[in-house]
Image 1 (tube, rainbow, N blue to C red):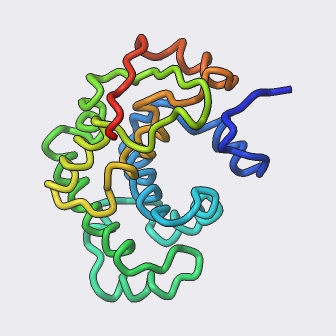
Image 2: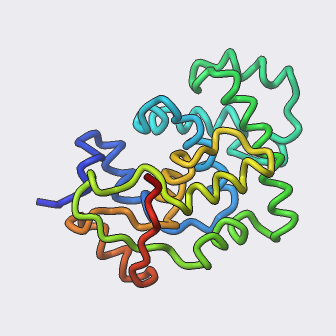
Amino acid sequence: MIKRCTWCGRDPLYLAYHDDEWGIPVHDDRRLFEMLILEGAQAGLSWLTILKKRDNYRQAFQQFDAEKIARYGSADIHRLMQDAGIVRNRLKIESVVRNARGFLTIREEYSSFANYLWGFVDGVPIVNNWQTANDVPAHTALSERLSKALKKRGFNFVGTTICYAFMQAVGLVNDHTVDCFRYLGLKSSMAPENPPQTIT
């Protein structure tokens, strides 16, 4: 029987996300932007809810093309507020546009958003050794630093907890528990253990 992180439960969509996506290092800018937006959309909701809406988000936000989203105006916000396929929260929708503009600014400055983001871990993922899901922190000193840096650049819905979930999702950290079958597979291609400092 395959052993997995306990948080993914039994839902087939959640299992596929855990097995095939969560924690795998991402260096593609559009994919990073998508995950940052989806993590922000998840605030106050379950991640499974967002996974079920992900295809709708991709359609509503033009496959997360930041250049197009950055040009959105009030008519686009109104259109998105009528879209039942996404979370119809005005602040969250408006934050996508703000974040797209911040994303483009960073990409221009650093050649890619990936260069900027991976600079927070010196280009190599952090590998943790959590025994159980209860050991995994909700945020860390590093996620706090990323959160502050993004907020300074005008991003919204990038609090420290959201940023840590994002870091876990795109592989800046390997937070699979040590008994999960994905842990060793990812660890073999990652940096030596270097656990972040948990904020209390």
